[in-house]
Figure (cartoon, helix red, strand yellow):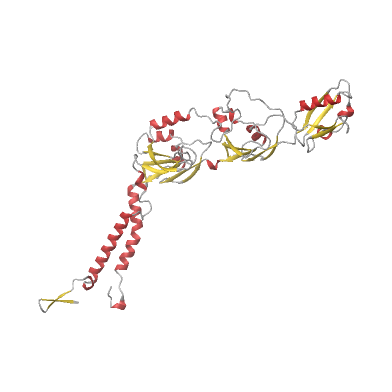
Length: 413
């Protein structure tokens, strides 16, 4: 189109439609690049370009925190703590006096008693299915009425389902819930009417009424009979063949009457916490957990990112980095190494400056806990190269489309 100037003179239209093709292509490219830059500045459309937001040691991150006033977690700001010698000393002091107690789901054998206190051993209570061996001196017809060549459990007296036994001259006698000593006194009192100066003894021939269940990471899982010898957690595990190769000695779950407790056998081995060796009761279920809970996660710019299983819950930050192949020298920024811990009521975030000479000494003294997350940040130049790599295919596509020709329209674009 043309415009009329000064009553008849014409001039070319300065609109974009009247400009040459190259001019139009340049304007389109400019608008596209401006829109792309605005998008990059407005939001994180490129993966990983916001990872540097944690690089402020004084910054805080909003995480769910369980407070004393609220039963449910509430969002609170959690500060990032630098890993220093002072922090490690504080953690060592806090961990030194700690020993597993009855709190936090742990079960103790001597609740409220000292470790040196003598635990009273309860007497075995007779129950249905048990077999008693009753010996009356100078009266073999009462001792082995079925024959003298039969074994004790075959010739013994079986406790019936209603908890009674039948004995000559005495008849039915309720014995369930009583000890062998009580049954002996009761039989002596009844037989004294028929035998002068009666002398008898009552022993357990077979224990069949009470059981505990041992399952999980043991060599021989199954039922364990409760005898007159008190059975503790460690005794039950030993009867089951001992711990399996994947067993977690610190996570033995004891379920009793609908309540589950955690027993830490490793603390008994290493710290002398004998109160963890709890006495078992009939019907208890002992479940030895595997080591899958004791995992730590090493992510970010390391040679082999992934999860690692802690050996007996002992691992340091230096060991975790070494097991993951250490940090990638060509991609990582060792100045920014993070440890994220979220198992407690108040999650914690720690930062290690790996570029300092003493950083690995600090990392070797910094003890990790199960479910910790170790993250190694990316170097700035690597992050920029990744951004360019994501943008380059789009830029090449736009360039090719802007330079295309359309023969059907006489080469016009």
